[in-house]
Structures are given as structure tokens and as C-alpha cells.
Length: 164
Image (cartoon, rainbow, N blue to C red; front, top):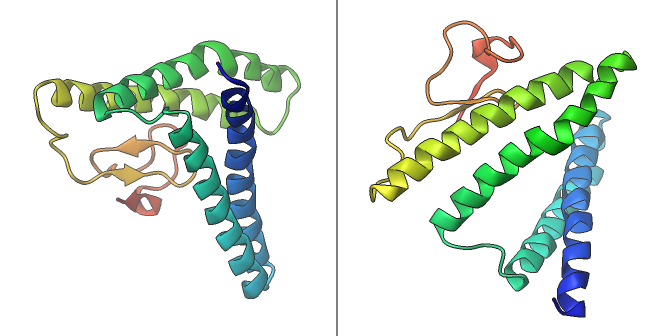
């Protein structure tokens, strides 16, 4: 790996985190009644996303759809095997994040299953059959059908799901 590639790999997480932080800052500024500051943060978030994506492209880490699905499956499974088990400390610490981590583990498992379905379809030369997905805005659960009552992971009302 060249020094430039090392630098790109180091910069990518920073750009990605800035993207998410500025997005969260935009939401807070809007809630606080500062729409122009919110727009500035929202735009800055998009700039950071552009920077992060540029680094991914320079590193050639965006492959074919098949390669990307395999990478996504590996990432989701790896997070559940390596990152989230250590988050169980939140239960021991009785930290308010403990429920969020428990939900994250469940959503990662659900996401991996969705990616497996997509991979299977792709290997048969097809796209996913269902064109409509539903997102729980609280835990990140993604479903191919809108739930009848509540989210199966965080129990949010079905009415809160976002049709995508």
C-alpha cells in the first residue's frame, strides 16, 4: 500500500464522521429555530459526503454490485462479531445506550439477511423482487412489508415507518 493510500484510508472515516455529525447538527439547529444555520450544516454534511466518496473511489473500494453486496454482508456480520459484543458493557454500566446497542445488533442481522436476499437475486441475474421497503426511523430496521402494528425490534408504531 502506498503512503497516499494510507492517507486516504485515514481520511475516509474522518470525512464520514463529519458528514454524520453535520447532519445531526443541522437537525438540532432546525429544532432550535435556526433554519439558516441548519442549512449551512446540511450543505456542509453533503460536502463531507462528497469528500468521503471521493476517497472511496480513489481507493477503488466501490466495486461491482456483486462485490459491494459481498462487502456489505461481511461488514454487517463483522460488526456483530467484533464491535457490538463489546458494547454489552453498556448493560453492565446501566448506560442509557444499552437498548440502542441491543437494537443495533438485531438490525445488523436483519440487514445482512436483506443483503443475502439481494445477493441471491443478483446471482440469478435478477434484482430484488420487492421494490418497496419500509424503514423504522428509530432503530433502522428495514422491512419489505409495512408492519401491522409495531417494529419487531424497537416496537415503534407501524405508522412511523418511512416508505422508501
